[in-house]
Picture 1: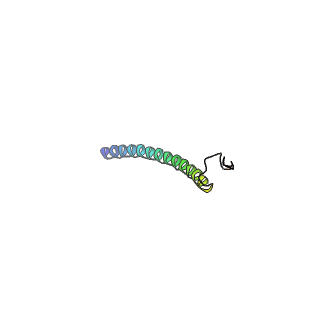
Picture 2: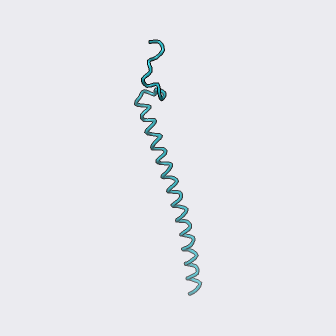
Length: 64
C-alpha cells in the first residue's frame, strides 16, 4: 500500500511540474499574440493609408 501512495505522490509532483511549465508556455504565447495583434493593427493602418511610409502621409510630393 505504501508503494502505491509513493507512486501517486511522485506522479502528482511530476504533474505539478508539467502544469507549471504549461502555464509558462501559455503566458509566453499570450504575450506573443498581443505583440502580433499590435503589429497587425500597424500593418492595417499603413495599408489603409496607401502604404505610405510613416510620417509621409501628408507631405506633398517634390514634383508639385
